[in-house]
Structures are given as structure tokens and as C-alpha cells.
Length: 333
Image (cartoon, rainbow, N blue to C red; front, side, top):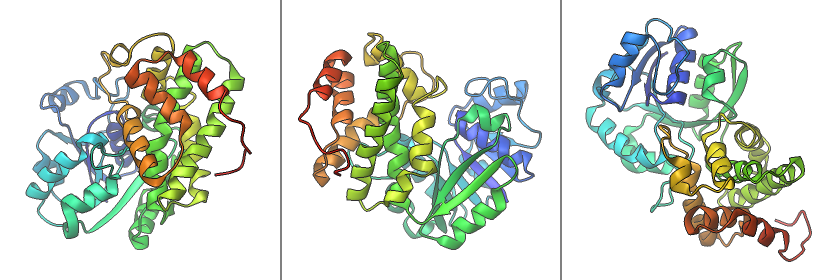
């Protein structure tokens, strides 16, 4: 395939690594005008993925039109809150209807739209096909060639199958599903619980509350996804439980890092200071709660995270409030 990766953050760079190592033609677009020059001089992405030399042949540019030249598939690897602006530029400079894969894990603030809905609004019939990619995929491990798996979600089954067959290999196994809603929402929501998981560590708590948090987090994610039309099976799959476990258990997760710092007593501004990459769970928390209100769904953990992040409530107070909620049957959704 001839692939354009739009976004040279850690995940976009890691995907470019993998695609080029598996003999695909790859162009990599960077928002930062000076980054392509740095990559050319150093042979790696020193800002977002240092220590991983890029395979030869990746064409890196800050010109979107140049990155799109000849591309069969466009991977959109930009933060959720910036996807719309990138799509508007893409619609202007694209030579033809692109087949696009969204990789952002978030919900757009204000509109409360999933990434596929943003793409539909901005590209409409100009998108030849659309899918989203999600799963437990830390950029550094993908760039290092460690084995992993992820899932393509699309209501265009032939397109999802084509991606799966063309891109799977010994390092990276891709699955496919038609549950676009479930995959997109699971990928967005898990970041909220990654923040909460980091808070558990920052507070000095042990394994018991961490395991309880993940279990109840899956319950909340499932409740909202089902209300929006997603499938229960997706939440126990790679985009759901798989990605949740990953981001809730490692310092490689930006959302987890933010949670740790807040749990240790920092404000949200202090916790995110100096972070070059975006912690998607912060804006997603507000958007998810707005969606929950729209669908009549209760998300007590997410509400607690919001009160800590945006109202400055002490994390221990939120834990106390969660532990003293009215007693319920466990399995009820």
C-alpha cells in the first residue's frame, strides 16, 4: 500500500515505523514545521519518539498536500480535538476521495461527536471509505517491533478486510469488526479510567482498589456504549478491556501519568505542564459526562474524575464518596 500517516506524534511515528518495515510506501506529515528537518538530520523523531531510528524511505513533510500524493489510505493520527481542522485542510488539498482510518481516541467537545461523525461531516461523500483503528498499542513497543494486536472497525466490511489482510504481519495482528460505535467509544472512555487508575497509584493505594476500579470502569464503559448502540462483545475485546488494561497499568500512558501526578497532590495544570503530547482523557471526561446525561446513564467514577480535575476536589474525598454510595446489585447495567 501507499500510506499517508497524518500526525507525527509518538503513535503516528510508530505506525510509520511499522508500515515501512513491512514494505509499504509511507509518507509522514508533521504539524510542526521544523520537525521534518529534525527527523531528517537525526534519523528519528527526537520530540515524540526518541531512541527509535526510522527505517529508510519514509518521506516526512510539513506540507499536507505532499504527504497525500499517491496515497491509497490516509491514517489520521492527530488529537481528537484537532481532527476537524485537519480534515478541513485535507478536503481542500486532497486530489481525490481518500480512504481514511481514524486513530484518535476521544470525543469532540461541544458537538459530542465521535471521530467517524466528524469525518462524515467534513468529508461527506468525499471519503472513499472509512475505518477506525484501536487496541492496546503503546507506540514505543510497536516501534520496537514487539508483537501486539488491534482492531479495525468499519461499516464497510470489504475495506476493513483489505486493511486487515494488507497490514497484518508477524509483529502486528489486526482483527476487524463492524461495531464502529463500540470501538470508538471504548477507545475514548478508557482514557478516563486510566486517569483514575493513575490517581490510585498517586494516592499510595495498592492492588485491591486498582482491580476494583478497572472492573467498575468496564461496567461504566459498557453502560454508555450500549446506550449509544455499541455491542457488549466489543467491551471485552481489544478496543475495550485490552486497551483499558494497558493504559491503566503503565507509565507509558500519558493519561495514567496525569492521574498519578494529580493523586500526588498536583493540580491539573501542574500535572500537564511540560507534556508535549496530549492526554486525551482530560477533554473526553467532560464530553463523556455530557453524553451520559443525554442517554440517561450513570458514570460515578467518571463524575469523580471530573470533580477532581475541574473542581479541585481532593481525590481522597472522591474515593470516600464512591465507597459510601448506596449499595446495589453488581451485574445491573
